[in-house]
Image (cartoon, rainbow, N blue to C red; front, side, top):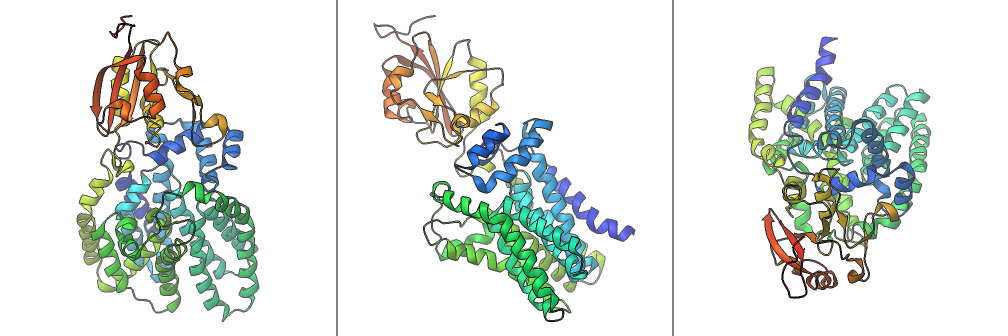
Length: 483
C-alpha cells in the first residue's frame, strides 16, 4: 500500500515543488492576457465570443471563468490551475509507467516528466496546455483500465469522457487516438468483442467533438494566419521547442532508445504517441493553415517520459543508480529551468515590460488623465498595461470606441476619425508604444496627426521594450498650457 502511494505521490510532490518555484515571477504573456480578458466576461459573453473566435479554447475559458469568480484574477490565481494540472499529469504518467513497464519505471517516468523544463514553463502559464497534458495522460490510463475489464460500460464511458475533454481543451491532442488505436488493434486479435466496443467508444468521442472541430476549422485562418508553414528544419528543431531544453530533449531521447519491455504493446503505444502526432501536424501544416507550433504537440511529453523511465530502469538495476540518473538530468536542465522563470519568458521573443510601464503611469497619474495605446503594431500591449495598473486607477482610452468584450471578439474597435475622439478638457494624455522610436511614429498615422495637432510630448521614459510618454495640451502659441 505504501508503495502505491509513493508511486503517484512522489512525482506529484516533485512537480509541485519544481513547478511552483517562481510561479508568479514571469509577467503575464500575451496569450495569458487573452485568458484574463475572456474569463472576465460573463458566461453569455464568453459563449457569444466563441461563436466568432477562439472556440477551440472555449472549454478552458469557461473553466477559468468559474475559477476566477471564486479565487480572483491575480497572477497566482490565474496560473495555479496549470500547476495543479501538470502535477496531476505527473502522477498519471507514473501510474501509466507502472502498468506498462513496471513499478520502478513508473516512478522514474513521473519524476522525469516533472523535471522537463517545458512542464514548468506551461505549468506557469494561464492557458490550456497543462490541462491537455493531464487529459491526454488520463485518457490513456482510462483506456488501459477499460481493457482490463472490457465488459464494463462505466470504464468505457470514463474513457469516452476523457477523450471528449481532451478534444474540448485542444483538438490536435486527439491525435493520441492513433496510439490508442494501435493498442486496441493488438488487443482485439485476442478478444474480438473489442472491435465493436472500442469502435463505439471512439465514435461516441468523435460525435462529442465534431461540432467544435467544425467551428474551430472555420476560425483557424483568422487565428493562425501568422504561423508559417514549416520546412524540414522546423521539424528537426521541434525537440528544442517541445522540451524547452536541447540537453533535456537529448537526454530523454537517449534514454527512450534504451527502453525495453517483454511485451510489444507498451513500446508501440508510447512510440506512436511520441512520434506520429508531430509528424502529422507537420504534414498537415502545408495547406491553407499551418498548425505547427511546439506547444500544440506538448501532449507527447508523457510518452517520452514513459519511454525514458523504462530506459533508465533497464539501464540501471539499483535504486541508487537510477536516483543518480534523475539527479543528473535535473542538473543538466538547471539552466533551462532558470530561463523558464525569467521575467519576460512568456512574451519572448517580443519583450514588453507591462508592469514597469504601469508603474510609471501610477506614479505620475493625475485625475482626468487619458491614455492612448499602441494598437497599430502591438498585440495586447493595452491589456498588459491595464492588468498591472491598479483597478481603481481609471484612464479614458482616447481612441477606443468599443472594447473586445462589447463586440464579442478579441480585438478592439477604434475611432474612424481620431480628431473627433479628443476632448478639450483632457490636458494630459499618456501614450504607450512598443519600441523606443519617437512615440508618434509608433501609432496609427491618423491618430498621431490628431495628437500632434493638440499635444506636445513633455517626457518620454523608456522601459524594457516600450516607451511611456506624457503628452500635454499646447496653447495657441505653441507652449504647454498649464493646468
